[in-house]
Each structure stands twice: as structure tokens, then as C-alpha cells.
Length: 422
Image 1 (cartoon, rainbow, N blue to C red):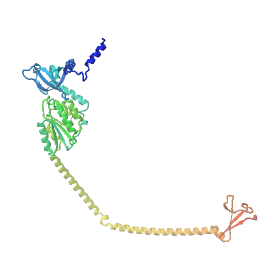
Image 2: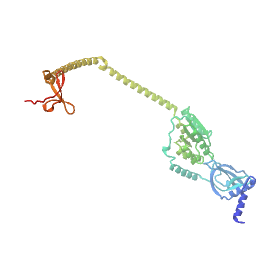
Image 3: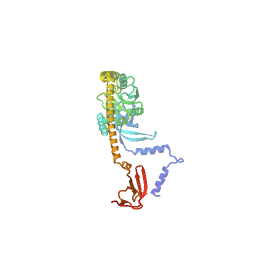
Image 4: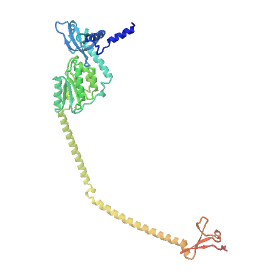
């Protein structure tokens, strides 16, 4: 039998059908075979649960990714856990060298640890510094990205720990300054492995609420490990992507997690945040009264100025006797109208005399007066049929039609004989 035939038979055996299913033990064994082929890996995470019962040889840990909702179970020899200094506690960041293991009886996967190392403060600070440089290079800290807080927000979102001093400080100071300030509080974990997912979820809820104009993330002071969630990369990017302005009020004045650089406004303490998000009603009331007084004084000053101006205008002669100038101007108009009438009559008289003189000269020089004394005007048609005045006998011949114009009409005749003059 050839190799290809053997492979075909093995593949046929591995295939399952409804009539030929695999037992659970077979499936578990095959999964275990695949997992056991994996080698040991270094894993970094945050310890969320420790189960180390006295008298047992194995400790059970739950290792969680601080930036995602993913966790795995880790088993380790009890001696390995007890040898860690300082003692391992929940919320600590560790690096584990472990091999994936599949427990056939329960059908579960866990990591079998052979070495556990706590991440020290120096390493945590170095990682935060590397992340700070990365976010700064991407422009998340740029001042031009910062948004101004609204003068009087219609809604304030507060993310903080339940019944914490930070919550009390923000609420008391905000309500002391503006009693009607509406504040929506969402309580979350502010330290430990569940802090980042809960804060991000609360941030997304408040950011999607159209009634919230500003979001405050507040927490009291703490150690570097306690403030680690506020230097988480996922949380910093979520704050940077939020559409609503975010105020960071983490710890005390010396505490500067990365969230302070990404937020639109950094407050040194939660008390400072309560004072920065709303105006002081007493100061604003005093400012309104001050502006009202200034407006009243300005209006009174303007009215006084206009009254003085009206008094000055009223005292002028043109307003004291408004009809006097009109009467004087009326006399001037009558005088000029009479002068104009006389000038027009003189001009008409001169022109009429000139017309009469021209008419007399025209009458004396015109043909009508000559014809009245017995003279006539003889016309003949030229080649184009137009009448021309006859000035010489050479212009007509025998039989030429003639038009003889007299003082009271015209006579048509025909030339019969042309006689030259002496």
C-alpha cells in the first residue's frame, strides 16, 4: 500500500459524521495534544485573584490583561508564590514564565508557571515614560487639541470611586459654587485590574449623553501602583477620542499620571475640579450687579448728553423763531420772481421787435412782393421731372411745358417760339 493511500485512510478516520462522531475523550485528547506542543512563554499581566490555601502544594492565580477584558488562570507551586518579595497581592503587575496546559478531566486551559517576577516601581515608571513619549509624539498632548470648558455646563459627568473622598470633594465644591449644577455620578473602580474597563465604559456612556457637557475623572492620592490605571494607554486614547471635554483630577499636586496630559484640563485635586467646572454664583451675581450699575451709569450719562445737546439746539435762533427765516426767504423769493418776470418781458419785447424787423425785410426781399407788382416766376421740368426756375431761353425748346407762377396761383403753358433778346 502506498504512502498516499495510508494518508487518505488516516484522513478518512479523522473525519467525523453524525453517524460516526468522536467521543468527548477523543476531542479532549486531541486538543490536549495540540496545546501540549506549545512551548513556554513569558506573559505579562495583572493579578486579580490569588487562591493559596494552607496545606496545599499549588496556588491558583488569575492573570488579567489591564487593557482588555481577557484573563487566564495560572497555576504555580506554592513555594514559588511564597518566595516572591514583596508578597504577591491582588492588583500587582507580574511577568510569568509559563507553559499552556490542558486539563483533560475539566476541559480547561491554564498556564503552568515555573517563574514569577514582580514588576518593580522603576520598571513601571520606565514603561510610563516610554508611553508618554509615544503619546506625545502622536500629538495627544498638543495644546491645540485641548477644548475649552463650557462657561455653565447643562450637565456634568463624574467618574470616581463609590463613596470616596474625591466624589465628596467634587460634589460639595461644585454645589457650593453653583447649587443648581446637575451632576451625574458613575461609580467605578479607581485602582486594580478592573479600573480601566469600568472607567472606559463610564466614559463612553457619559460621552454619548447629549445632556453632559463636561466629564470629570476624579480620584484621591495614592501610590504609583494605585495610580497605574490612569496611565493606561487604552484609557488615554479613549479620553483623547472623546467628543466631550474631559477634566482630570487625579491624586494630589505632585501626582501626574498620563491622563493629566491627555485631558482637556488638569486639576491638581478633586476639590480644584469642583471649582473649575462651574462658575461661582456669588461672583457671577456680583458681576451682574456691577455690569448693571455700569450700564445704568452709561445710560444716564448718554441721556444727560443728549438732553444738553437738545437744549443747545433749542436755544439756537433758527429754532427759537423758526418762521422768521421762512418769511425773509419768502420776500427774497418774491423779489427775485419779479426781477425774473421783468427780465423775461424785456427779452420777449426785444425778440418780438427783431422778428417783426426780419419779417419786414423778408417781405421786401421775397418774390411774393415782386410778383404782387406784376412779375411772374417761370419753371420747367428737367430731365428728372423736377421743376427748375427758367433763367435762360437756352434751357427750353419748342413744346416744353411751362409752369407760370403768379401772386395768387400758377398757370401751365407750352413754349411755342423761343426769341432771343436784344
